[in-house]
Length: 152
Image (tube, rainbow, N blue to C red; front, side):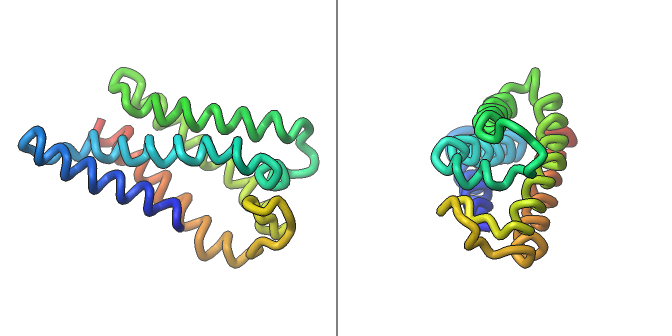
């Protein structure tokens, strides 16, 4: 849930910034900037914690490091895409699909007790999946839909 602090803090700061500098609350901009910063941050983490992230991927999928780097690049590109109104809706749709698909890796990671930061099997397990990761996925999907599709 620590990552959600990035999302909400960026949103609040951007919202206050639009009120101060533009004279009005720009929820569309602030919501998409919050998600953009969040997803770009997580995208870069794929390069810092590649060993642990590779351990999250189910065993039947080959070339794990390729997928770690590839999904990191996708996340960074999605963050950038959310900031362009002409491609925001398509980016949001693809990002929601991505969130659903990536949840498979989160299930696998929880079953194996992967600690992505240490790159070992000392992670919190299935409790983390149900108490933190699943609620976070729901928030991310709802946020992306609301600011990237609904308000767009």
